[in-house]
Image 1 (cartoon, one colour):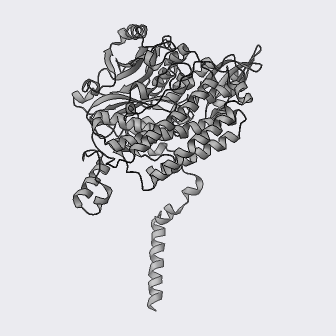
Image 2 (cartoon, chains in turn purple, green):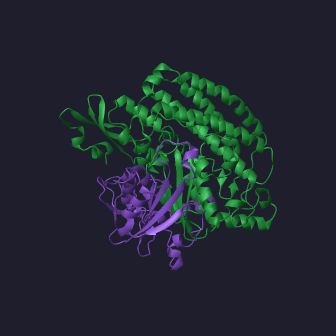
Image 3 (cartoon, helix red, strand yellow):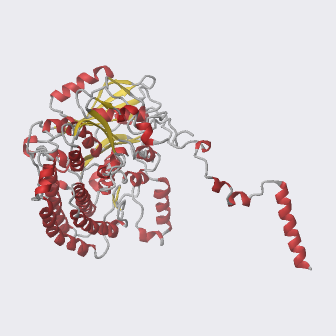
Length: 201
Length: 406
């Protein structure tokens, strides 16, 4: 069963990130994969010391299919009071990743915190971070197949794949209510008929 | 599949030289949930530690993508189950930004949101302090903390209708106004709190055993804290005064007078003191909220696209019933766009990156889980410490696994 949420097919709605840049929450930049590492390292040198978050979005019908989203935060790296830190600033880096071969350079060596974040994106979206030292599944069991947060990943399994009911449930009243064969039905009708006749006499 | 035998490969139990590999958890009382830490130990001291998470993964983000905007809030609130309101507030703020109604939320709703946030912060810190005490053998602290938390849960029940997951904060305002008699309950709590706080400090702060176990343990330097993306009290224990309430104010926090407690030491004791100070600052904010609560007013935005009709009109007017039916059965649509919204949850910067494609369901909700990033720093905090101190380090980071695994 496909996801109950079908992505809209209209061209503009395929990329909601381009539509409302005026919501004042961060400075937004879109970079290409080739320029990603250089841009992130430059931002880090510029004082964006914290990789706040690293996530991904799947725009199924769009090219490139995925967006990997970096949120960076600028803070003074030394011990500081709120006044010395000044006004912190967030920046959001969006990076399109193709769907057929989702590869992206890892930033684990720039920020240690990217370790688990990249593993999570790999686990749930199947985007491979080249250069990550320990790219394993993190949330799903290691034997899992598929990447659950992709939009073409089903929300529910097919009924046949659901775990079978326990033995006592199989012989429950569900079957008793629906006669399995004509024989039982005939027996029931016969019983009703005899009951009526008995009442009449 | 037997989890323990599948995940623990033979080399984990094997011995190599003097170092031994050992698994701590996932069923370990001091891991506060289901966390497994694979340790390489030499004698009693930790050489290497690698937390393995995901035992509580329930696919909340995937579930939320297939619910209406208002329904998604219900599952999102279950991420950080010790401070549920911080989740729902952060989500509501993000959706309000996408809807463009952020500046039209009634003042009373903003005041009550601040109250709910600070109460949940105190309640969450109470659980942390109680369990942290138990980890270190100080059992009586737990009962004092849970008594205080019980008052907050009672208030949550009378305001939102449930003790743990009230879903009180809604997109556009609140589920309803505070009930009659709430202010008295709130006053009683505000009066009781300082004395109870003195008790808690008296039990632990100058306790030589507690100090021995926490001072100098798990030192997190400011540089390391930034590298590991640690936020919240754990970051402020390392000397960086970053608090989302001050840096990116929301729901009117800029109008309140409060300090951001900071400690320079960076050890478990510093994080302990920061959290205690934070509880007192929350009390300070709550006292300011209490004065504003005397002002009556609406608690839900006057926008029929987002908010349903007042409950009492539904039984009297057919239009109100149709309106109610439409809002509940179809949800509201949110204009396309993406937004990142963060709040200061008791554990740090909780953020949601929400993408809408114009439908009545969220396209994607990405959580920035503070617990997950804080917990990750164990990898550099644990080596060199004793196993017993690892328990202290874990407790001082205060992870909640509903949020780590989601």
